[in-house]
Amino acid sequence: MSAFLDARTLPDRTVLTPDLAIIGGGPTGISLALALAHTKLNIVLLESGGMNFDPRVQSLYAGSESGVPYTALEAGRLRFMGGSSNHWGGYCRPLDEIDFEARDWVPHSGWPIGRKHLAPYYPRAQQLVEAGPWVYDDSGAAVTAAKGAALELGKGGLYTSWFQFSKTRDSVLPTYFGHRYEADLKAARNVTSYLHVNVTGIRLAADARRVDRLDLATLEGKHFTVKPRFVVLAAGGMENVRLLLASNDVMTAGVGNQNDLVGRFFADNPIPRDVATLVSFAGPLAQYYGANTTMDNGAIMRAVFSTTRHYCESQRNVGSLTTVEPAAELDEAGKAAVITTALALGVDASNARAYSLGCGMELLPDPDRRLTLTGDKDALGMPRLKLHMTIADEDFALYRRTLAELGRQLLASRAGMLRISYSHRDEWMKAMDWGHHHLGTTRMSADPKSGVVDADGLVHGLGNLYVAGSSTFPTCGASNPTLNLIALTLRLADHLKTVAA
Amino acid sequence: MTFLKGQNPQGGPARRTMIAALVAAATAAALGVYRFTNLMVKHYAPTPYDDLLAHLTDREQAARLGAKVTGAFDARREAATLRAALGSRTFTAAATADIAAGRMTEVDGWVLPQTVVLLSALASRV
Image (tube, rainbow over all chains, first blue to last red; front, side):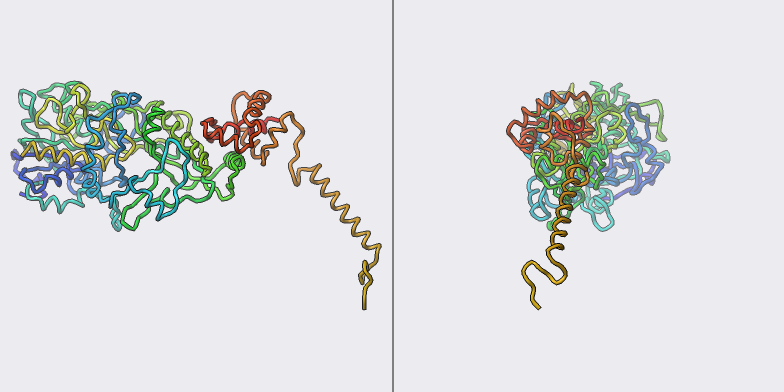
């Protein structure tokens, strides 16, 4: 049967026996279902919410926090069809090769796969996020040729890179996967999407080697069972953890948590505001720095300063993406700095313009930045989550060094100069915002002792439970995760086509 | 009507002399304003570092920047450093060399070539 079904209308105690159960109707779950549509696999897609926001469903996400201030757990994600794509900003950029690699200066780094393993899946992922033709750094020069010269940077650790954006259509902001792909999912004869149904338990067989069944419940009190051949947990970087840890009847520490790793290494991309002021000696920057620019081929582009591999390796630093934000005003000391420096360099700065800079940072992995269960229960009787959030002084220090390098490169090219806004932790924290990218909590590893899932997303020690999405990212890079998690999901789809056939 | 050379209809040699005297007086006054006031050009008391400070096109702005340089500053020692850095080079060449070599210093968050910072700090302290 192919449809969107309201699970509240099903008879109580219904038992479903699909080939594959996908838990979660966000970008990951929908992309997986679409990739497996029109195959011989009988698939159910299980979504807690409906087609639109419902505060009663959303409140299932509520939890508690400790450590550094962080977004409330129910605020940074959305629990209805389309998941958090219903409030994403549409930023797309592939991870860099170095993001996948083990770096001795980044503890716990190294994916069991490389960028080359995702490369075949990026084109389809790019289609799914509707970001137009693949441009990025591969042909970013076309943007500068068409839309004005890039700010020249002297030789050094940063270069002008590019975001692309999920397409904006009229008043519809970036691709909302639920609404955008509703018709496609309904057209897939082998996919049935169940709305308003919550997975409350992943029940293992007695030998703890396979998932036997899933327990499902509605907020109205109905209970169902799904007995699938394969399960893909695609509920997001927080909810994946909650389901695994709460399913502790056979594995007492929680499913896949035999090494106490489920929920650890939580990460997000910090995006502190107004991190620096960039002065362009020659005057206004090209439009594509501070705003999205649409190319003739439909690609929506924005420039960003990214770190080079050589810089990260030689300076033992991590990735970051520094964006140009609105114009800024200089104080008297700032004007004096610009005048004195421009005169020293023999540059005319009479038309100089100043801009605020923003950023997306890569956090160093931290096993103590983690999600755990609490004694509080939600409306379904599921234990709620607690997040212990951390950000190290080293995280700020590394990014600060990158900003200093950008400042040096601007001077080297005589194109401009830069003022770093923050020196102390308190200053950074006051400016802090987060990307709401929930990463790393079911990290991927070749060695079962250092991760939760293997290179295919299969939970170590289990034969039929996979985890998909950015919770499997061992390190997060600085790029926004959506495009990358979809590429990874499409790779999983190919794997499932083989093992589940 | 015709005029003899050096004459005009309104006056004779006495008037020309008066105009010349006025011009001379105005010139002297301008020179005085230039030399003995800060109305046209800022004048600074002589310092042991004038050879260095002469590199600054706008010493007042440099001093404003230099006032933001924090920490101990031994003018005599830093001047020696600057003289070594500048040598026979221009200020621009020295600053460019700093940038290429990564000799950067932060002042109030501004990422600046070391030579610019030292010279600005010197300007603010003399």
